Length: 188
Image (cartoon, rainbow, N blue to C red):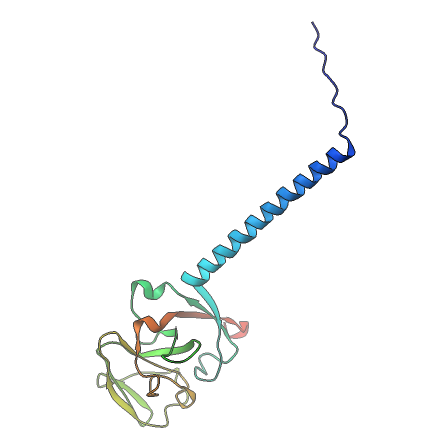
């Protein structure tokens, strides 16, 4: 016996419109889910992995100039402490915002500046990145456990740990480590 297939009736216009509406709704929900997932992933990455930060002010010049964009990795100080020479993103007590500075002293170090030359634990510190040395002498300051000294590379125009309102920072003040400059490209 031959089987007879029933022909499908063409859908009526209201049924076609309902199907289109349903497809559009599914597509919109799919896009919304993708956007929400991308937003959550972006927030996670920015909060725990990396962040792009714009440098403001002259305190780090010549190393970094005002307006430069830098990549800051945030996981560095979850498993280790800041080291001398690291360029860091940090917060100052009692001040809004975050600042890009260089670590010049770690717990137990004794740091001083005399006639523009920095010494750490009685030894001169090679600082080729400092183009304008400090105008005033500083220290000596001996750092206690969990204390860090930060300074800008432009020592004449930097508000940093030498300022009594800032002082030595605790490890919790650091948000991440500056890895490299993203912009401008010509000095990448």
